[in-house]
Each structure stands twice: as structure tokens, then as C-alpha cells.
Amino acid sequence: MAQGYRRRPLRTFFIFITVLTLAACGKEEPAAPDYDILITGGMIYDGTGGKPYAGEVAITGDRIAYVGPDAPGTAVDVVNAKGKAVSPGFINMLSWAVDSLLIDGRGLSDLKQGVTLELFGEGRSMGPLTPEMKEAMIRRQGDLKFPVEWTTLDEYLSHMTGRGVSPNVASLIGAASVRVHELGENNVAPTPEQLKRMKQVVVRAMEDGAMGVGSSLIYAPGNFASTQELIALVGEAGRCGGIYTTHMRNEGDRIFDALEETFDIAQATGTPTEIYHLKLSGRQNWHKVDELIKRIEDARAGGLEISADMYTYPASSTGLDAYMPLWVQEGGIEKWIARLKAPKTRKKLLNDMQNPNARGENMGRRTPADKVLLVGFKNDDMKQYTGKTLADMAKLWKLTPEEAAMELVIRDGSRVQVIYFVMSEDNVKKQLAQPWVSLGSDGDAEPAEGIFLKSMTHPRSYGNFARLFAKYVREDKIMSVEEAVRRVTGQPAALLQLKDRGLLLEGYHADVVIFDPATIRDNATFEKPHQYASGVDHVFVNGVHTIRDGEHTGALAGQVVRGRGWKGWPDGGCRKKSSDWKDLP
Image 1 (cartoon, rainbow, N blue to C red):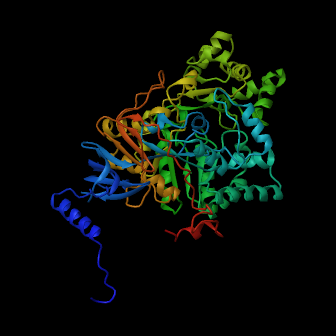
Image 2: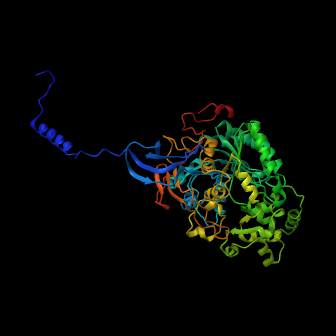
Image 3: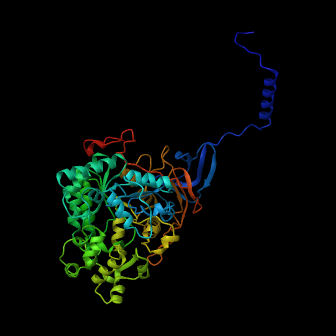
């Protein structure tokens, strides 16, 4: 007997014979499935804009394990996507779901359209907060009430996902929030020391994972920032791998001045720059659209990284603060209302509102009162006026439209949410045709139930993404399905430099949507906005089946998505200048 050889006991011999017998009878233990989920039979739209192809997508854990014509192996769950499109999850570049997701984490109005990432931070962000900012946030809450249990922006996002949300969430740091954090809400310029602290606030947020800086320059106190102040803050975001996104200082009569300021900031900082909700407000400005597009194209050709997002409707929505001059709003809503109640101030304000040559953004000068729809009130006693126009209120109270707007703000104790019908459908089409335009709803992500039904909303909260495919792809044929998919997946993901998201590629996070290009459609209207889109059958968020056969599964698998400056990345942290990021993968 050779050294090291051991005689097997008799029991081991019989076990061996039994295994051989079972194998011969074909009764061996089945192999474990190769994947958790296998999507078969669909047409693959990978997010690059390339031609779709018949294929399969396999998911293991929270990652895509296979994309191609025929996945080898088996899966625990097989989803039949025959006749449907399979694409990356959609990215909402301008989301105001900051409150709604704290109340209901499902985000149904967006999720049912295929949105798997909500990007916050237009001007104001949910952090960082001082004690005074926390107190004001709680005091100014409307129907949606919640405790403020965080201080930094990252703590807010982690708080949200800790409670459970269906979509992924990310945020820019709001330039106005940085200003309020250090200067308050008054119209003052920062001292050199204050500006230094403001820049430090931006860097801390970027290293915590913020995507960049977002400004909103038609509103107080964001409008009080000078171009040089914005350059200082955006420069910090750029060297931390972030972007700059701006609601420009003017979207109407002086839009080209505002556009030049945007270009100046991009040029001075070298930071990729996105224009929020590209539009031309006011009939007298609609003819400027070709020049607007040309100037952006020229800037891009000259080396500036300029892009834009928009919503797919010819009406905007904001508050009555956009109807009044900024000087009356200095110091916050409480001081604004106090000024409205003072007879002398009210008289001066009325003169300014009716002056066609007054500077600044003033929706009242270019929006007829019967085109201003009242949709959101804070005070329950005022909700009876939901669905009426400003003209209706002026007639009811026997006031001018300007005086009625003042009275609405006073009585409601808020800016009052309204819809302005000030845009051109032809311009919407022209702008959407540009390859550098993506989508942002500029709305929240809410369920059509409960407390959310106490107010109306803009239909963009329920239909912005579905409408792209239903109207502008299928009906107007402005672009192909594959191009529309690229606009809401690969394009914004590239701008944000997302890690392993935005495309259907092996190893990427499994944010996947299955929809029918022939039936996807928006159902929300201005009269009845609380109606979900249809045509999206399945949504997977981080590999978890979150919408199955059009219905929510109860899954809350959303994660915080962090920017390139996040210290947690191997190559994270800030650089000396924004151009130092260009050679990184």
C-alpha cells in the first residue's frame, strides 16, 4: 500500500455507490441559478443612443451581470419583456421631491414613469442648515410636515434613505442655501472672510458627495448674489469634480444678459454648466428661440461645456414671488408679508409691478391674469380657491391683479404655488430637438392619494418623462426612441460623472426600466394632474423589483448617489482646479 493512502470505511463506500446511482437516474441536485433576475425577449436600449437590439439583461444582487443577445445560465426570476423596451432607469435632473419623499418614500408619480434617480438642489438644498434655518424650515411647512433631524446635506440624504425610498437620490448644494448659511436672507455682499467661509461650506458638501452647485437667480435671496460670488462658489464645485446648474437670472425680456452671465461663470471656472428648465417666458419673447439656441451652440463650439434640461409642457409653475419685485421679498416670507401690509410700501410695490420698464424677473408683466392658475395653498381656509385664476380672484375681491396677488400672499402666509401659461409649444419642440437637452420635472414625486390630494400640482410631476415618448417621439417624431432614452439616461449620467450608472453595461448598478414605446403616455392634465402615467411595466432599482406589472411592490431600495468629489471614492476629494478631472475615467 502506498504511503499516505487510507482505506475508506464501508459506510463511505455505500454513500459513493448511492450517489452514482442517483446520478445515473438523473436525480442529481439541481445547480444553483446563475442570476437573481433574467429579463428576456425585449429590445435593448442601452442608453448610448445606439440602435436597439433583441437581447437579454441579467441581474445579480444590485448589479447588471449580463447584457447581450443570449444570457448563459438560469435565474431565480424570469421577466418576459417581449415587445417592450429595456433601458437604464431615467434620471430627473431637476427634482423637488425633497419633502414628498420624506412623507411617502415610494415616489410613485415619477417611479411609474421609469425615474430611478432624483437630483435635488435648485438654488436651495436641504443642507447644510444652521439652527435658524432649521427653525424657519419647520415654521414654513405647509401640508407636508416633518421634523428636521439633520444638519448637513449628506445627513439629509442618508436620513431619507434610512427611512426608505424607492428611487435613488442625489443633490447639488444650493447657492442660496450657502448664502443664507453665512449671510442670512438679506441683500448684502459677503466680506472676504464670509466668502472664504462660503467656499468652505461648498467644499465640505462636495466631499460629502454633493453633485455640484445649483443656483436659482430669479428668487430672493439667490438673486442677491453677484456674478463674482457665484464664480467663487462654482469654482470650488468644479475643482471637486462637480457641475454648475442654474435657473438663470432672467428667462424672458433680458434672457441674453442672463445667458452671457452663465457663460462667464462657465468660462471663469471651467465647470460643466447646465441651464435649468430652458425656456422663453412671455409671448413677446418667443421669437428669440433660434437666437437662444444659436448662442448656446456657439458657446459649445467655443469649448464651453454647456447643456440644458427642460420639462415637456408649455407652462411653468412657481410662486407669486416671481410676480413681484425682489426688494419686497428681502429677509424672507415673514418680512415680505409685513411689507405687503404697509400702505406706503404697498403703493410703491404696485407702481413697480405695473411699470413695464422695471428691471428684474416679473411674471406679472408678461402673464395675463387669466393665465395664472392657483394650485397650492398653505392655509386650509384658502384651499377653496384652488383651480381659480388670478383674474378670478381680482374680480371676486374687486382688486387689480397685482393687488389680488398681494392679498393672496398675505392671507395664505406663503408664496402661493401657481401655474403660468407663458410658453410656446413650438419652442418646446425646437428646444427638445437639441441633442444637449435632457429632462427635469421641476416637480415632486408623490402618490395620487392622501394628503397630496389637498392641492393641485403641475402635470409635469406625473407625466414629464412619459410625455417625451408619447408626444415628442411617437406623435411629433422629433427624435427616435433610442435618442429619447439617451437624453434621460446616458447623457445626464455623463454630465454628472456618475459611477456605474446611466447605461446598461455589465457591472453597472441595476437600475432598469421595461416600457412599451407604443403605449407609454402621460395621463395627467392641468385640470386633473393627479393621474399616473401608463406604459411602464417594470422598474428595478439597484436590482430590486420595485414596479412589477405596473404596480409598486413595496420595495424601498433607493440609495444615495454621490458625486466625484466624495471622499469615499478611491479617486475622490478635491483637486487644485477643475481641469484636473478631465483625464480621469
